[in-house]
Image 1: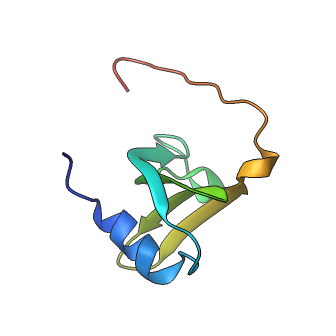
Image 2: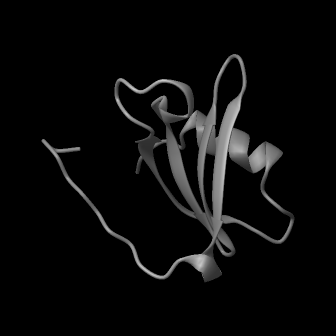
Image 3: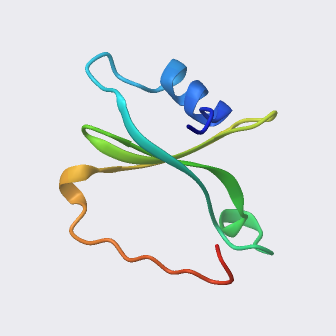
Length: 84
């Protein structure tokens, strides 16, 4: 079994609501490889709870948190490039 990511641990401590639990998580990133500004690449984790899907990254300077309520998700697409 994979050791829990430090990002998942911090998400549990800072953002998980009392009635929620982490159902699943996986390493990933958002943004573009050479992006800048709001397109900067951030490595972190994709987290699924009973109520939402979140991308979370905790760093030295701050954190990145993007959430989507599960009821708002209507489809999922997956793209794989060179094993990523």
